[in-house]
Amino acid sequence: MHQTASVLAAGAIALFVSGCGHRNVAPPEAPARVVPSGVEMRSSPPEPGYTRVIIDANGERATVTEVVDVTTATAHAEGIVAHGRSETTKPICLTPCTADLKPGMHVLRFTSVDSERMSEANLQLGDKPKVLRHAMGRTEDASALGVGAYTLVFLGAITAVTGASLYGAARAGVMSEYESEFAGLVAGGAGAMVIGIPLMFLAQPVRQPGASTELSLP
Image (tube, rainbow, N blue to C red; front, side, top):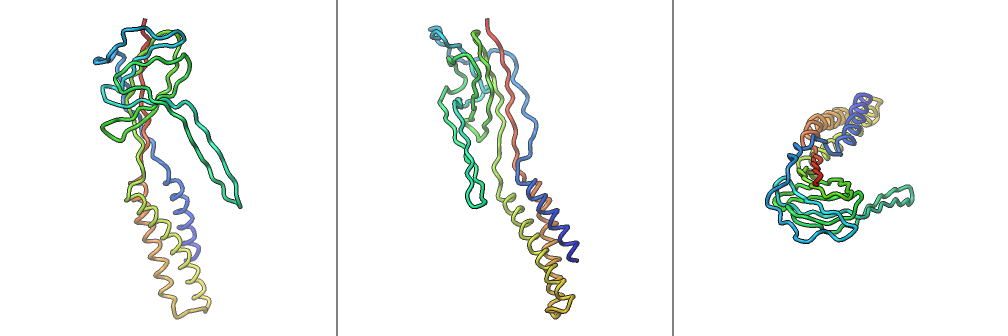
């Protein structure tokens, strides 16, 4: 029984680690290659060294910010590794809109004003004006069901391994009067894992990238 419980616990822990991430799904359909309607065009041309771009969130209202800098750091202390990440952003506009940006690569973040959807688009600009249309994806946080499922699997694994160890000791003559109780611990822990593992994957949060369409203008 101890070996069986250990195998179950090891499998549960492996599933726990793999299930803690996001479930990636396909992006939404990319927007059509047309100039969006309802854009308030600027009357003056862009300043020298800038390129004009029309930005649209596939007909939705979204705030657009540019990620201009990302900094990552790793710290080590007494065997513990901590990772940190910070970024600098600047506001661009509220879609549909126009913006004047310098030629080069730009990382634009679209955040819906009506929902919690958010995703990013990479825009490569040259000297010619462009249209960028972006269908937003989404990244979900872990739900209460997911947190409960992870907890159930984790505690079930600990209970099963502990119960199996005590059951083995009872079979060897140590605390033999509690043999049935220790067997119950193993069964209870295994049952918790059997219930928690399907719930863990059912409640796994979703990560969906956005989909972009670019159109060069004359």
